[in-house]
Length: 239
Image (cartoon, rainbow, N blue to C red):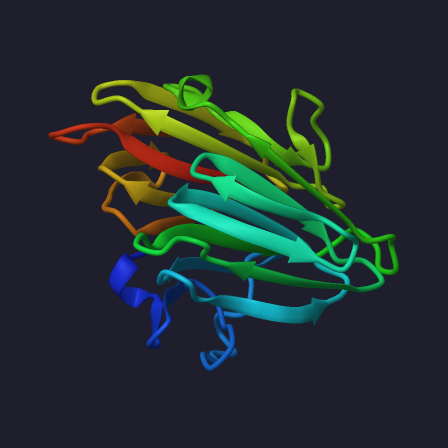
């Protein structure tokens, strides 16, 4: 079963310092019918203005995956980590028993655009930890590149959940096949370009900002259909 959630159906939060699009209930967006998809609790697309940011705040018992799409994102936490994350970098943070962190835009001129993904951990009370890794664009061209996973060890970073986050950049006419298992869920989000997704439910066209929530067994096909450039997408495999 495929459910397409269009970009326009997301909740828009537009403040002076940050523009956000929430795919699930988050912050001032409260919808009891849209609180999660399996263990996926949040899927936020954010754009921070120069010299602005999410100042130090706490989390616990969350697996947080951040993907920097454009610009530079500065991370600091009370574990002693500090890094300026360039576009193409994925950050993982296991909040566990508790972590305080900030995410800010150090640039004087440019916005930073990033995705933030929240997953439930497989168990509470784990030790907090942080990691970040840059993934060159050519590593994900016309393939699904695992960047954060609780089950795979293919150069991806670790999350404490039975889930895998993939990145892909798909050229026009190229096709990926993802054989989804009966008991699993798949969340596909399109960052840019155009793709067609299809399985036994039929074929669906995705525009930038659209997402597909997929359940039950499905040999999922994803085809690049952009008239110009490539399509960039995130696929999350979930219990």
